[in-house]
View 1 (spheres, rainbow, N blue to C red):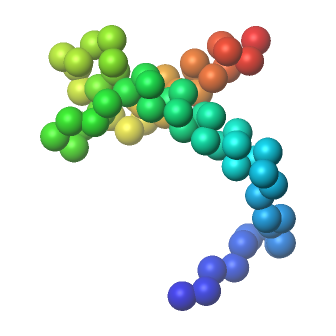
View 2: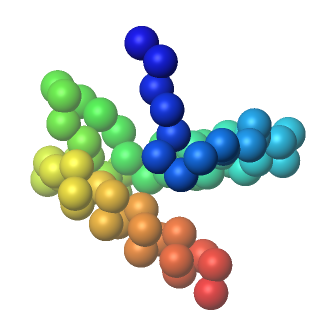
View 3: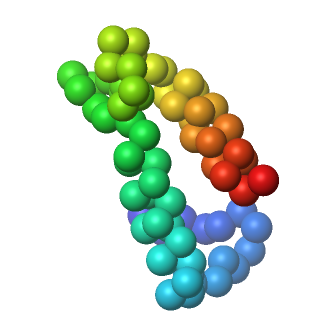
Length: 67
């Protein structure tokens, strides 16, 4: 299956882009764990999080680190 980008040509990721993605993935993976198909915050393993919850927490934490 060939997929066509909606916004035209997307440039290939640079070495820096790939390094940033790896750094971001490593950071986010230190915040959450998956168990039985559910996501949990490392600090609170008693409460399962939905996908929107995980996305919201990630955006908030990334925003806080960039300030």
